Image (cartoon, rainbow, N blue to C red; front, side):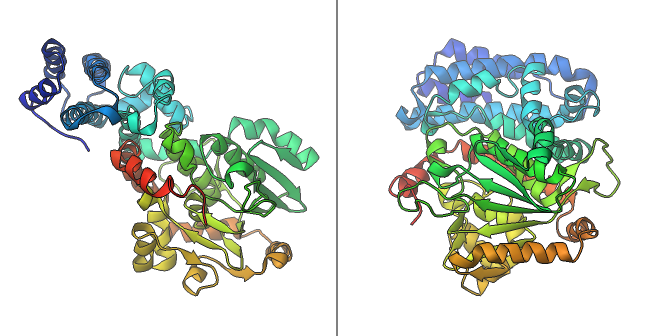
Length: 475
């Protein structure tokens, strides 16, 4: 949360925690010197950035004087949280006052398509301390999640403010829908050979269908920062291939002892990597604004138009639900045009129990199930087995494991036989009334702010130790 504590209250909390009085007074004087305007003033960007820089630098110096977060007593913990909240408040107000001027600077006046992770890195250079540098994020990643103070919180606040403005937010979302450099580089290979191995993903062209296979096999096709790039690139390749007219998502057979040789769709977020502090906050933003949103909206071209209909290159997608779709896997089902499931498989969204926001499921699941069932899934950890009637609001077909391949081929063949000329237009027409880009932008602005605090919260660590450590793999 963002606190607006008075100087005296901050001084008392830090003194109680044993922080040097001189360091505290120096930090508080930096606050007094920061004249953030109440209205946007592009001419003050550099001056205000210079005033804000010591607030962040000295605040992190104070935090380093405290014990590691998990070893602090109650008084030290309260002091540390107050310092983080005070810096978050400065970041929030700074970005509110300067978000457009800052975005203009970072994108050369909207002429460059800058991805959200690169935008954060550039912001760290233009406004030192406002958001962490890549080196600072890497350094903090050496700590367990429970020992992180939350340098990445300011990334979420910065992104939330960029998305809150319609012009900058739409430009950022459109930039995230551009093809990745990796996809452009390997498109010729894919067209020529019909298959590309991307490490944690494999993409194949089979007739007019492009198949994306998840190949994070040692961890049940879970998602993390090492899968995000390959999975997005694989989707790009299917969308860019001139002869492919439909895409298919499926998990490859895994190596987990319990499921060895069996296909698994996805076990969701890699909680081991999250608990170890290795999963960066930006993973959530890049995933949902890039990989997942491209499945839903397709690829954007080089032109940026604020007040025109979406102009994207898109194709329909089919998902094959083998075994289970947990967390992030379930979120993927919600952007599919058709879902074929293995009998006995299931999907759920345990993110609330873990302590995070489950991607864009809060935005999309109520459209499928209605708000009452969606609340059960999102807030009360309800699991839906595909054989039940309620799961059929998400799943189109259910077949025994041995007949899934046939069912997929039949569905793909059937879709192609009707011709695909209007498929993209029909997808866009559905989105106009269910999830226009402005609605997604507003949701992601909130998501960025809330997820940033959740990602650094003590509750997240507590939940992981309570629910996940006792059971590190799905039943």
